[in-house]
Image (cartoon, rainbow, N blue to C red; front, side, top):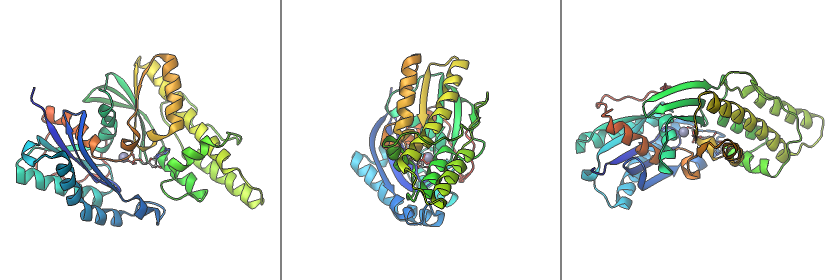
Length: 334
Ligand code: KG4
Ligand code: ZN
């Protein structure tokens, strides 16, 4: 079988990235420029600043990726690009770059949903095995998906309010930690003990999640201590918060694996970098003989390698689009 090289482009939020992936699983070269240091100054991603930086960086990352790979465009099978969800101005920069390359070099243009990409970050580690349950945990999404095949995806649950990453970032902000606070809370949690009592959210029979009540409980507890002039142990608060998050995510995910009789679990999205969440799932999956996979740390957050991996399977099915492709800031995967 002829090898297929997909050039992936990702600009949905604050990372400008280009990657070349062989046959959906082998990384040839990836360039990621993160704007995180710029947005930290403002406490979160500023959309206008994000799109301007994508414009500044996009040609550089594409050129660097091709140069590092020692490849020219005639070796590329197709151009895969994130079309949504994400920040519309940011998405448009990647889409225009992808369209330009597709037009000039006469390559198929492959639109990729951002969550599909996060799922396929796992395929860069080991081949996805179906059926699988995927827990998507990112800054914008918290979803449980039942995936029977590449194109047979059912959403069985999702957050009713905040996404888990958003909740981490808001809790961190109250504690004076700059954006993105998720990784810092994760580290602090490991240095603390879960001594504070926090409510377990949406402890019901559904596969849905809720994090806004937990977020408010943490913030109220923090402010109550401040107002009473007492010091709260921040590491222990982080640990108490993280414990509840882990319990909520693992309880529903493990129940879904059992109920749907599925033996493969994959994590996807920025929060799957969380050490506490990975460790607990590893332990539970070992006990239940479930095959567990998560992306390597640097590909948990946004990057184009996962776009190239997902794009390959869309390429094989001929799921191309024309040059009218537009950004869809709230695109649904299913
Ligand atoms: O997937 P992603 O890069 O962007 C979206 O598509 O939303 O995820 C970013 C989110 C941020 O909320 C960040 O705080 C969170 O992932 N995150 C973490 C960790 N690393 C990144 N949250 C908890 N623990 C971590 N180690
Ligand atoms: Zn993402």
